[in-house]
Image 1 (cartoon, one colour):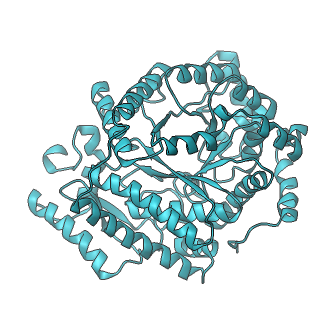
Image 2 (cartoon, one colour):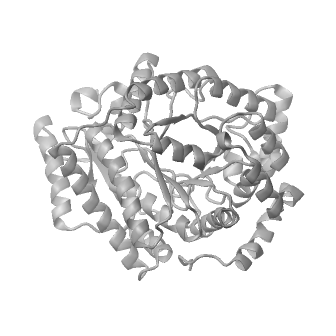
Image 3 (cartoon, one colour):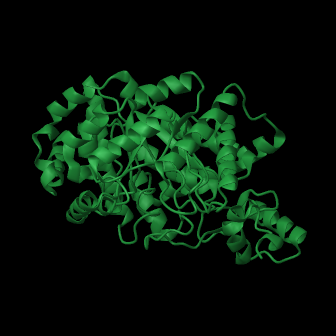
Length: 486
């Protein structure tokens, strides 16, 4: 059973031998840790993720980052240069699906076919196959910090290669890059894998190199109750801090009701600091990232752009340090670089307009924040109790017993009993609690909110509400009322 203990350097280096031997690019001399430290220290400040985040938070800015990645080096560099010119503040490299599953030989074939036919046959950039020298070439061809974004339960070799290449941020975590993405990877295994990734970052921190880590906030991106989003972010942050991570960006995906979303971002940051301080990690630098709408998008491009604009408004008013953008082609497939650039420009314009504004305080906002804090504390208390004080063991046991449960996740290690639905104002509430460790008062709150909606819509509280809500935004409504579902 995994434990929430900092890995010794000796143990880390022992496991590292196995990790580097898992694929041919792991034998690269550039992966020598002293060589990597020297290269990372040479990365200029304007390409350093942690430093740019620190400056943004100081200036109360919401910076912009798109998603993007293609398999061929030269084409990927062209794409990133294009997005940089469009106004991105951070650059992504979205990793392909074969790499996410550690199927590097198949990724290699995808690169070859892409070159032969002059179009992408992978849905991202296979960084492990390209190796350190080529990934450094990408960094040296742009003028902004680079982050790997992927969805990999076991990203150990990927983390080694990107950090040795000067990429100073890695997204993901043991829950957020397992439960929403994989079916058969156990929680225990993914905690072990991500302890390695975080211990690697901790090693660099011990040697004077700061690297940002970013848990993936939206999870399945489908009406996930904010208490679950925040609890998962807290767990991944605390596990990362234990291994020596110092710079963390906790994430939140837009749900749709502006008061709930602002409350969610504020509570996420507040409780991240609270739990880190409580655990003795008082030297962490915390920022937040807001993900634009992750559910179904309208097919109409104008409506899609409106949704992007709305998300940008909420992100700015919530005080998020960073925002991940979407495009007007989300309902169609992989966006063009022009559509991606358009999303960046719209998002950046709105965040600039709102830079000096904030969402006004109100009784409604304070009520929602208080409710959310109560729910998150209940989840965290249950996780610690399940592990008898050990967060890693508690997380494994909590998922086993359904005390933590992510709606609509493919993982067989997730109970999949929790069901969400919106109330009549569009707040995401809990329709079926499964085994979530909530008291009667919390359950009563959610039920009453859903009953108010049912009464207004003249129907029963049922799973049909959930179904209607999943499709509502793509049809131009937030709440899936019966007339919007036809």
